[in-house]
Image (cartoon, rainbow, N blue to C red):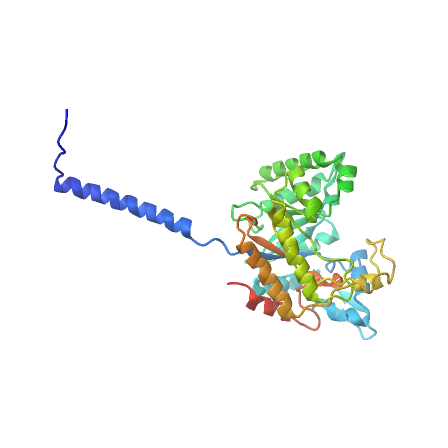
Length: 380
């Protein structure tokens, strides 16, 4: 039987119009959220804190490598040069760390990636000073651990891994747009994985255990980035259950008397090569690469280096403008590839690898031109 439509009363029509209007408003609000611009990519800088423990073998080694007159212009702003040319570097003071934080924030950096060591190691002094600072608002942190620091299958570094997991839950830890704490794991080779973990399956178990520690500490699932060349790095990412591929440094050790532009071009090609593997990427830009201070005066942890062997292998330093432009291209690369670089982060080598040629930290007497130029180059 066919029913005739009922007449709509004025009251009923008004109610339906109101409901339709409310629904439209909700949908419009949801659309506005969906259409909101994504977070601008965050640029971080690697910190290798060799300056914070005066008198230790590491600090003495970098003082020695930067003491010769040709290299003193690389000394950090808090170093001192005595009349006889003796160099002393003491970055292990809170006021120095607070000033470094201020400078990094002013330059537009979003986080530091601290090369990670055990809690009480002199090499963790910089991280401890950062965590003790009352000035760190606006500058987050994460960790970049060497694989050897994780120990081995028979004896994992339980205390170190527990501490790192606790740090992942720190309110100032760097996170991806999805809220996952960023963690870098590097300096791994097939041989090292085989010797220490019995192969990638053993290391995968260690990664799973680390994720469980992070959850127990109240952190979200860490976004774990393998620092390695595309091959075999992409294979490591897949085999050990990591999330992305990155790099600590990108340089050609055979480069001889090469311009900075060649270093920048190499790094930028590497980002594309990483993305071509099909794994997610956190790219690394290069502030420089010139190891001659360490070649001239080898450091204890590079037993393979013979004094003077390779003094012809280096890249010339870039100008502040060249470095800033390269770093800007790295940020733009991330912004243009949300599916390839969903972490929304990029790294620069480095904040303070001065004796290896990669630095942003102001140098003696107080040359902060790299940071000032970077601030003008970064998107706001």
